[in-house]
Image (cartoon, rainbow, N blue to C red):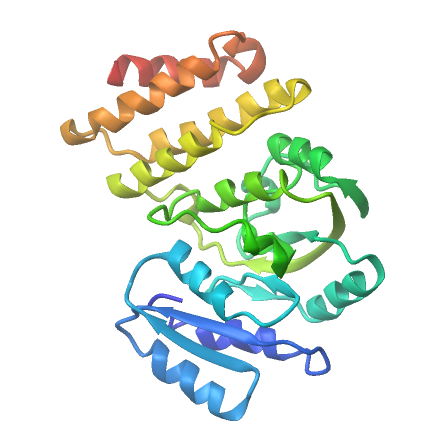
Length: 296
């Protein structure tokens, strides 16, 4: 949590509602300057399941890694400080853990504004057990998502995988691409267990250049990972979509042209063997041409 005083009570209340499930709630305060610390400490006094930690502001990757170091449970769920989980979510996950012992559980979510289709394009899969490679395909096609808060992880996964230090944009995508390459199977639950707080207009908000640069680093890291040959085209679409998000978020200014040039070059390199019009449609083709004209 960073400066989450306005929402943290609601978020914490959603985690505390399943009293019969054995959990610990690890709150990492990432250098907040508001009253977040006082609120969480007061809540911790009345509920021993809450464990509070503070670190100087370093961003979500460092905060999550620090929280994972403190975790004592067999499974880990990430919750952003302005979101909620639905009533019964922990019980549903606990039941799956007891019956299937899956390394990873993927579940659906519901945004507070708009629909899931406004955020991700694919239809969420049917409930069942899937191989990790089939889930990699589902990730590339948008049926499941990069968001780490839409999964429940075996804590042992993080003995070998960490959030990338110094990258706080699209870091979730790096982690999920590594996770699916390091586990055997995934249980997918087509139930909406998570409420994603989206305020009107927030989906298209602009970002600072340093955030765009960090997103570029994240995508460059993903680009070095091996991709199954039959998923190559889906992977190109997946990466192109994220690169386009970054370049649309970059304000067209003189000092931003370098990173914009790197992004559009990567888009063109990715798509050099495909027909952009056939794969993405005329609208995307025109957008790519426009970005090429602006930055190259």
